[in-house]
Length: 79
Image 1 (cartoon, rainbow, N blue to C red):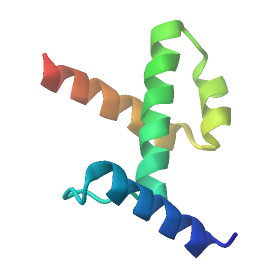
Image 2: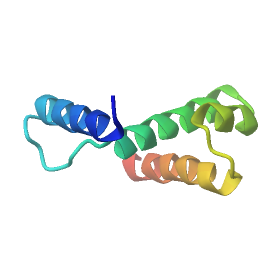
Image 3: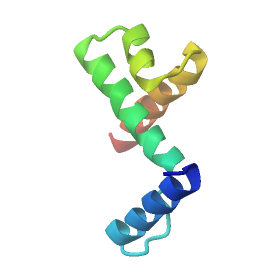
Image 4: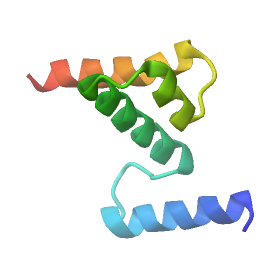
């Protein structure tokens, strides 16, 4: 399975689930969503950032911090 094949599957599944909604589901968006959930879970349960970074396969703390900051700003918007 090629990279473009995976991309096509994810985009097609996203359309099927969203019913042709405005936002497209892409492999990058799926990864971003997973990393944001991971960052939230790690913060909530006291998991070391280094361990969460390993799972997300990020090497730079600055990159992983974006997901943590994204979750924190969204939480503030909801309150």
